[in-house]
Amino acid sequence: MAATIRDVARAAGVSQSTVSRALNGSGYVSPATRARVLAAAAQLHFRPSHVARSLVSKATHTLGLLLPDITNPFFPAIARGVEDAAARAGYAVILCNTDRDPAHEEHYLAILRQRQVDGLVLIASSAAVGHRIARADFPAVVFVDRVPPGAEADAVVVDNREGVRTATRHLLGLGHRRIAFVGGSAGSGTSEDRLAGYLAALAEAGLNPDPGHIRAGDFTYDGGYAAGRALLGSPDRPTAVVAANDLMAIGVLRAAAELGLRVPDDVAVVGYDDIPLAGMLNPPLTTVAQPTYEMGERAARMLLERLAGKAPPEPRRVVLPARLVVRRSCGAGRDGQ
Image (cartoon, rainbow, N blue to C red; front, side):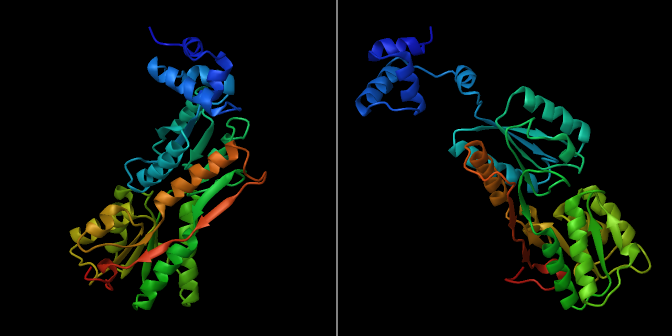
């Protein structure tokens, strides 16, 4: 039969409340008494009940994490950052993959509410999620990567506009003038920001965007492939393509190969995210690197600060920089790549 807190109290010669304070590190317990309680707990192989503890503290020491697509290598890196920061603070993480489906998202939000998670780290699949999440539902929420309009919560994002602007300017500097853009999901704030960076770079160069050179790829490999076939198979095909993520860029690379086009001789390709596969391709993919692990780690720390009452009342916004990683897919590789 498993030992109880009463057994530990009897063996240590103290009250049950003293055992609770000694084991939880809450309230004053003399060093000698704490040592006696810990020794008794170890001797009895006592394991505290997290359920019982949560009933008293009103906290489950559990965080929820919602991701749009766990098969995209960009998101597991964020999840690792969240998990590491949570584990250091003694929290567990429940990961939910929404498949970019609002119905799945709503389903998982309901489950996390039922599980009474202490807080939520969220990469929203659509703008509508901002209207479905309120502080009344979760004690604290932190958005990562994208912030739905009207969402009053902490957030960790990357300067997507500047990232794509830098990539497009790099292609312009290589002499390209017919540069296409493959964007993400319709209504995605991330995709809109990256499109804005592309358009800003063209405007700086005195170029008008060709509507036929702007395609949607839904942030997926298949979407990038379809967009690549349409762009590169047209009579006025572009000489360069900027994709709003690496999966779509890889789809464009496949389309180019099937159409008999050489990269970067016939068409230059640039992605976004710098997933591990990007540097392993032939040719290696020029891309905009995001600090994915830091995004997740910072988001979890912000959430824990909010839960501990150590955050200011107003929502915080952390904007991390993106970095262009130049490889051979754009025709200007470095370091032998």
